[in-house]
Length: 261
Image 1 (tube, helix red, strand yellow):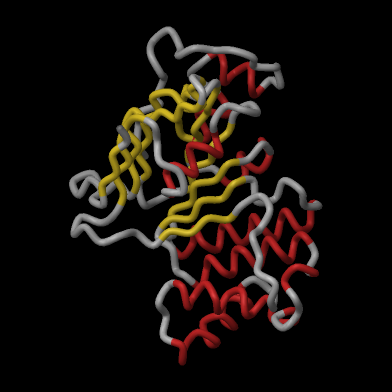
Image 2 (tube, rainbow, N blue to C red):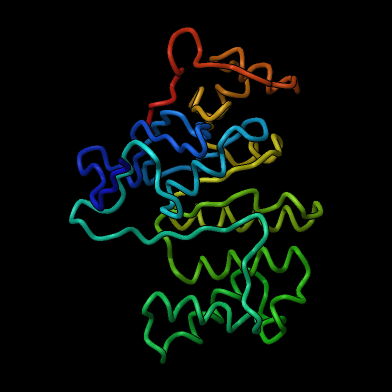
């Protein structure tokens, strides 16, 4: 049975830790024995072929899904919950103004009513959205909607931010704006965990890289090492643009899959 704990490892300073996590539906293991420790610092970028379990891993780490097997530990040493946020590939926006979308998130987070508007306006300004604050969120451009999702997350001051391909459908200018936003979070000290199919983006943003294939974490290494001398043949083939259809764990086990940075 899945197990969830509210206390992260106080010795190692880990925010979220997955221990041998699996996710099985109708006899198929979509995630198979994944172990991953996420420390407060750095930008962890998750890459791999389609269907490798990247988004699923992130949703389990964020608590949106429960694993079939394994354990997820998350929280602070004192047992209090982490402040978390997640930005999806397609933002989930309410049928109200951009400003009201941020205010609603602040209300759910328990921010006092008297200070919500000020917080929301500051967040919108931080992502260049002040001029569209009173426009309906759902008529904004794709890039503006994604920046609104980032502004909404920013207002919550998360300790860890999960991003699932936040710029996959955007043009280069909008993509750069999203990347600038990610770096704004990083500069504030927010832990970044992000899935992307764009290897150029991964090179620009990553401090360390998690490479997944066939529901497993095959490799986890610092970004400079991953892009220059990947540990596994599967990762090397992926970087060369080869079609990776089926790989089990590497011959020596799972590379650095259980490592933490």
